[in-house]
Image (cartoon, rainbow, N blue to C red):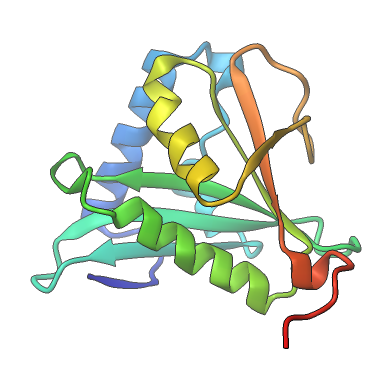
Length: 166
């Protein structure tokens, strides 16, 4: 599997993102859908990655959005994590998440957060993030309390005031 930055403009990526948005609106009330569309993923604060197999077939995608780049400590948000139906259960999301977190570390973010749904549909996502050390938290950034949202965060210890590893 090859994971690399790629603009969200290719036909296969746009199709995957369209499916993502369709599922979000089918699962959650419109006011509780916080998924980004193609154009929002082109913002300068967003880095977007794709995972592809050796034949260049799209397996999944994910993004990291820098929340208020002027703030200290620095804070990132995971967005648009999605695996193709054919690639689910093969570790694609875990590998994408590792790349996103490595980039957050490289940028010296203090923490990385995300919003996902409370419905059963989102249980695999919540399990994935919990396995990687995320814990539930309150709303962050521009989010507000929402019974359809779960907020999770991961402190990045080297940049949150903890001593650096030697």
